[in-house]
Length: 147
Image (tube, rainbow, N blue to C red):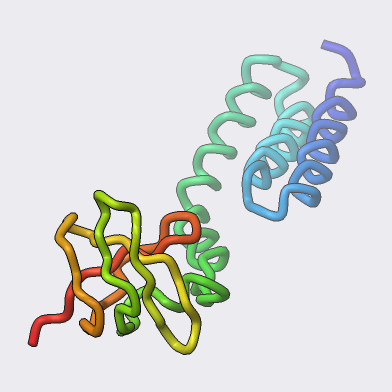
């Protein structure tokens, strides 16, 4: 091989670092480490391509295995409930009878009026307390509260 091989590996390391900077996730930082080790192997092992590729692969895989769990913990953020998902699990009152077959039903939850559908397909009469199970589009999927 030629004397330019370390420059190719360093160029790959820079490329992977730039990709990492624009990804906002840890997806190719391990390849930066592997590329740098391959560049060093050019100097240490007299430009043997097999050694370079081996060093790149081994260091990339080892660094992935060693750091991935910590990276996942750092990247995992607690999801903050916003907007409509804050209604899931809340208790509401049926204002208009819920009948899935007829496509009717209104539910008031936290002062807001929503179209309501029964989770199990049963008819829920007016005035019944219901618990919001899910939201599909602009419809609350509810179930009657046990008394």
